[in-house]
Length: 196
Image (cartoon, rainbow, N blue to C red; front, side):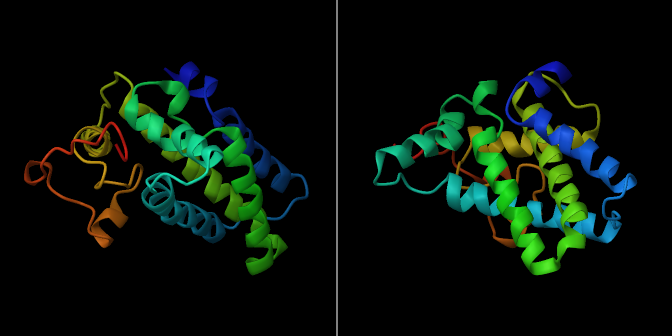
């Protein structure tokens, strides 16, 4: 189970970041403030919902190259939710987004905030990838909350693609009113084929 997690997507890169940033801090890099780490995690959880709802579920683009990106980043994952090669964020998407985020943190918060904020972002992405992975493999989480999170995400794939956008953090579904009790939602005919 763990080996498969590290074989796909950018998970090995994320693990390297989780190790490298604290080691750098220990050997002369900037100190790691818990507050900045939490700010980084919060930034990711806010962006997770926004990317998923507004970018990954955006209508098909008018350009062929952009439609291919949309399919690889999310449309195909809905069509084949159990394919691990479509599950994780690819490096060509995650790498530039991390670099842009680090640049924005540098501009807005200053150089000393970059390492701890990015550690928080990377830890939150790592958490997101793990929760997403567990939701899509034949594994039953041991905790009641873990089982609930798995079912929560699977509603998005098997009941309605228009609801339940929070993969690792459902709080923004409540804020943006995209949370519903499953028994009150009619099954969508396009949950597996976005924009068909």
